[in-house]
Image (cartoon, rainbow, N blue to C red; front, side, top):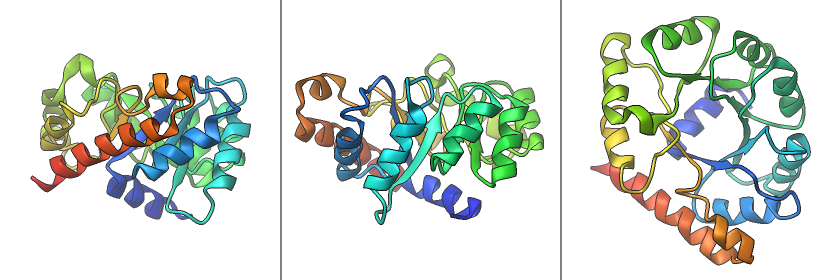
Length: 216
């Protein structure tokens, strides 16, 4: 899929579900439940034991749907290449590592490095980043997103880390393209109990909050 198409679909989705510390034997079932809740962008974090295999399994299972499967917490170029080979259509990181951006650009895959300051934002965009992950968003709040957009213009920002149903609207009002969400969207207790209906409903609740925020 072309980078421009993936980036637009990320923007259209409004939210990326961060799938962290989920056992491999249930990751596909969890991904299906979250997708059934209306979340179309799914991020498997690379700090899992076998992230490439998990990405490939989800990608195969959701093939033919509107799901986008990506990788997060990608800290080096070697990992970036591994998850891309497994089928990741976008790559996120908590930091800006030029070699990761370069590996994504070489493979023509959307890259979303983590930034906090205007200098990091400009450096990442100049290196070829497609979207900027404002992380950790809870530390600085929605005001930081609007403050970045002031001097830097219409840059695509994805606040992640502490975004919830309660504050999602504030981040979109500040100019976020989309948001990333982990435990606020992924019901880990329900996963542990095998209750995929509850997993789906938590995801649907977050999607409803995003849709409401974007329609106001």
